[in-house]
Image 1 (tube, helix red, strand yellow):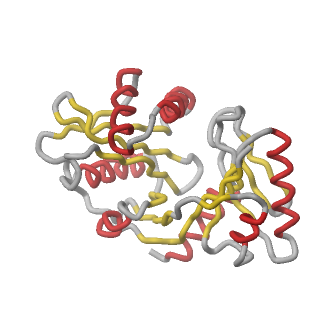
Image 2 (tube, rainbow, N blue to C red; image 1 turned 60 degrees about the vertical axis):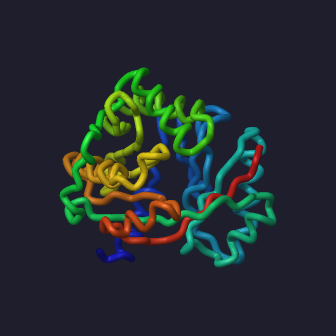
Length: 259
């Protein structure tokens, strides 16, 4: 792929022209800043795009701080390695933001990904469509990541109910036991679909389940007319994604300012 062209397309379609994260979410433009504001305090509130320089950055940051402080909301500034100015991260820290763990923005052309692999022997893939499926997906999340899945469950329930056809959750089952779960979000009107989640419980890792879930979601995205898959890859998943044909485009770091 032409990495710079794909990164520019990603910036244009999913950042500068960011689609709302769900019903009730507002995409707002404040001069050179694009932000997303949710309907409740628990919603994702974030700055998703900025075009700043050394002379405009501090004032733009201060406006976003004041805006979300006035709403009593926690806000994330999603910073990418090619954003300007080069010291934007330092300026965010000075304004009270705390950096999280960096991830790698990766992308792949769905038509150039390997056709397989199939699910390993004994593993079946199942779409989540009801509360029972959500229970199983949450169980996977809690075992895979060691954290409560309560908030994640509400987000998944809302996604399935409010965005049918564009929000997909897939379970990998070993018999009656859920052993992995992953999410696909289609972005209508864009070339992209997003891969999210992908947690596998201990004891079932290293068997190719994660790769099978990627291939499964790639087929869904291609069938719906999306050309590229994008993912914010953790250090653990990045080597697997590279082997499957994903290309690193940038580094992304969440900077969080608490309410």
